[in-house]
Image (tube, rainbow, N blue to C red; front, side):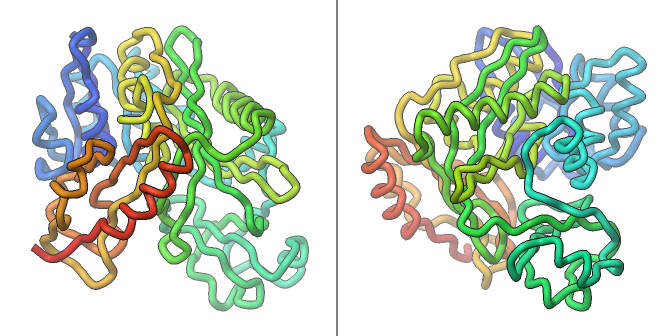
Length: 379
């Protein structure tokens, strides 16, 4: 029996627990502010506490053989101390130290010759015309260095609006805006013995207002050569982190067919949700295999798969329901995953739908119809 402790009890923790399978007996303890969290009803134990608390994380560690997380905004210094004391932490806390600060993450790319968009690190109040002239075009991407999540902390903004209309204060990252770039992700798995698996590339489309993924599918519409290059760059990024774990690498494919790494997430990721139904081994089962020291599973697609995020509408805060769920899933090619969140809020992730099909053309047609029929209403 492997005792897994997860810092955070949101939907990623929930789906990780749901992925357990008979040949790998696992018990789960989660640390979350409230037992009324998505992972709460299915975890063996819920520790109610703070993700930043040294004492609460140590309480989780005392009940676990291996510690991991489902969200980056946690107390990494306690994890570093626990690792020094002999506790197994996957991924290594050093990875989280790099990823938590988008500026440090960018510098990591630079230090390891990983292709990424040109950038500058500064304080928001120090932005000036001379600094902005280094970036082509009228727009730049502005990011808070710490604390961003689910599209928050990222802004595409006209250079003429800076610094007066900056939505962020303090340390920021400014990077080139890449017009008409295709956004791609790859999920990379590194086992405790160093073996690896890379999932087929994922093509992603984002909501321009919320910066959240709205829709994605795999296989991506790429040439075999570009697919291989993207997978190689994604694997290289992760191997440079020198840690076991499951990682999502988000990239841009430019009009000139240049490949630029955007960000790395050191955990299961929204971009891999389609793998639950679409791949032989889902990202969540793969994650469990890594945590338990088991051999990696087959990452390949069974058939083309797409995912649509189900988010709270702009005009609703409070109890909610998804309309016509039974009708949506009656043909056996649509799978609804709701996250057990008690209340809707504007742009809050409430669930996702996966669609499978025999061909990419059929998949995209089905997905377009489904997207119009996913409706959240007040309950």
